[in-house]
Length: 77
Length: 152
Image (cartoon, each protein chain N blue to C red):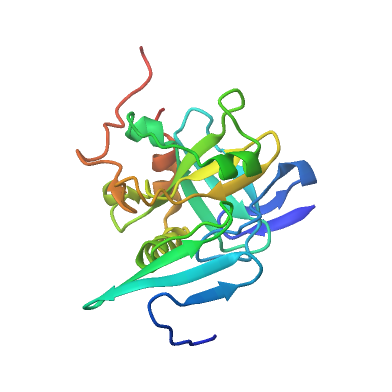
């Protein structure tokens, strides 16, 4: 975990091919520009977190009754 | 080889049954090998079982059964990584979350699971610009009638 302080215009280089630039600051909002290879996906943290939370809830709970599973499976396409 | 599933018991699988998820799955970054369990080929539901964690089973749904207009663009890099194309389209599933009442089930349209079943590679992708959400009700009008299917 690395914490840095940057001013607008300054950059952070991550690994060999990711660059985060602080573009500007307006009030509470900090604008960042991120340069990364297209195969590296970039998401707002709250969106990623939401997926993580939902996946964890979705991992089938052990107390789902067998009957419910059967009912669910017999719904036709 | 034998794997354990809390839901399905012991499963005898071969290497060609395993679907690889090189990126893991958000929330489960080390889970990279799953098998698909299809109890009823006519059902829109199936399961994705972890080969290493017996308790980890995802309930998958066919999105188009419930949301016939569901669509998204698959990023070129992801398509390349999965080896899919318009000529070799992937299978698409959404992960369903079971609630206390079955009819309250929701599914995640924001992050579908995309699988190339020939190459056995899968990935959960995030459609962050789509407007879809992580929780869409599958049965907004209640569960469909389960009444007699015979005699048709």
